[in-house]
Length: 296
Length: 281
Image (tube, rainbow over all chains, first blue to last red):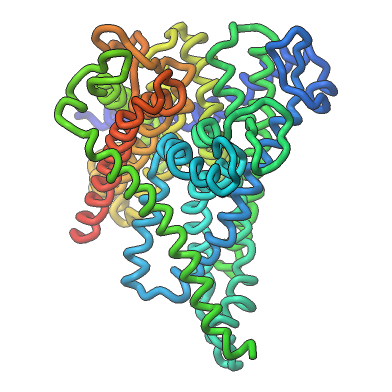
């Protein structure tokens, strides 16, 4: 082929590659505009103040009420419970893998964590119905165990692989001089872990927690299947709750297009989008901080 | 006093954490295999459902998931590889490149249910595809795109600059060097990323809820412009929405086991590619 033709192809392909790069911005922008457009349509019908302060989500009734508060509280409750379980377990496991386990043991543990991460959310939700639910019912003498606690346990399982992997990365990234300095002043391994390693890796651990929170808040199928989805205002861990994601999943399939109720589901999705965006940005900020330590 | 018990507390705490996490995995696998194994049979994976979903097999759900995953790949693989090539081979560090990278990071954090809404607005309504296999497959494609881009870019980054320079040195254009030298060397890494991403997409439920999945399809399935059955949604319906939930529990267990086996098989394939590639180095 002539050189001119080859160079023409080269220029053409470069434009093609660049277009797909721009497309990615377009997709994020498209999601943003879709949420914004429908949320604005919603606020033409319902006052923003009512949306954020009304304590009832009841779009079907005669006096339809679109209060996001019960959904927000449900999502927060389930996420909080999940983190209370997953943060200590995750940091402990990561510390064991990074500081205590032999290289061989670590090579066995790592794929097992990856396997846990690969289990589809709908399968975890199913196990919430058939294992976790009945166990909770037995312990609390309730008719069924479909409540916030069940959702929290399942979300903890789903967030654990993220928390473990990112925390372990952060611990491994610490220079070995930190450990050696600690040992040389007479500290043992446990003291070194608690007083030197975990505090120095704090930005990475916070990043791990943030990414775990992001995963838990946005998760749909497990909470949809395991938390009972009662629309009443959430009362606590042993009561049924209905998260933002579950509400969208349940109601979007039944609602007629372009009604107030339809727009309302996009409005709560917009709130979810903003929350996960902020959480992930915070996570990214802390990841960059520990990368900077590493480079220094 | 504290010093004496310190090693006990130390080992107990760490082993308790690690043990609990492993217990989760073992409990999941043990329960699915011990209670789902008896539901598996040749008939279960090759027959159509019958008697209001209380008997028969899950063939349409399996074929639905396979075709759906292929559609996902059809959208996400070419776009993802192309974007990764742009970022790693062409882009200079400027505001546009940074904006593209920030978009990719944010897209990978967007909850899957929001991709479902976007698929509904864009493909089902905007492009008038209706609730269909095509709309759902493309929705999953968008969801998978950021993962394909980051794994491909990582594979490209591992190719040393000298490889590219050698190709350019013998007179290849930049595109020829990418096509004939860089991509073939990065192929195992790219493939691993694709297979892992597709295994995640195959298990997703939320993005297909409003874009075309159905509990039951009368007659044959697999048409791109029609609604379809899929394994994850089938499991969701059997375990929460069926009128005879206790009666269909064995079918739900069977479906869950097949789904998890499909996902793990894809993961194993990815591990195998990675393993073989490392040994060849």
